[in-house]
Image (cartoon, rainbow, N blue to C red; front, side, top):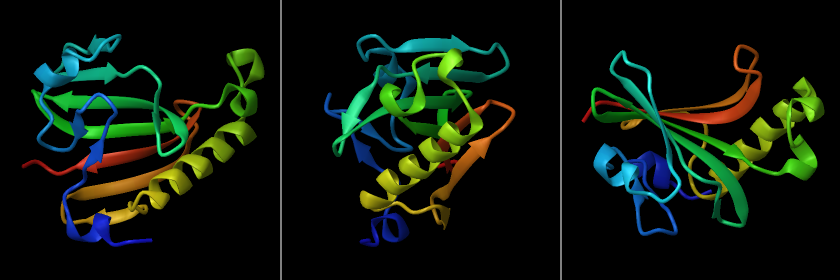
Length: 141
């Protein structure tokens, strides 16, 4: 692993020429084709991007804005053959494996789970949402 995560701000380039970082504005995200917006009505707005291939893995990416500031990015490797197509294919074990694969994918591009000057990365299975994922929490700028 290189030390990108330890020495820089969190930054991942998407194929559309958009960079996920603390500088990414809601306005930029809302212009992404086929993005789904979910305004929670409490200051939090989530944007779910269409499945995007990054570093040879298809990923589901969700961005959470709190009062217009990006504060969380959720990554989840998308592989229906391994993790199922719907709730009929779901189980805890698959989601734990998905979390591990997503964590390894992020590690391969330079970001391990842990605390950083720019925020924190957590990887695992969360029973409340019944899903495995990686969460990148960004500190306020």
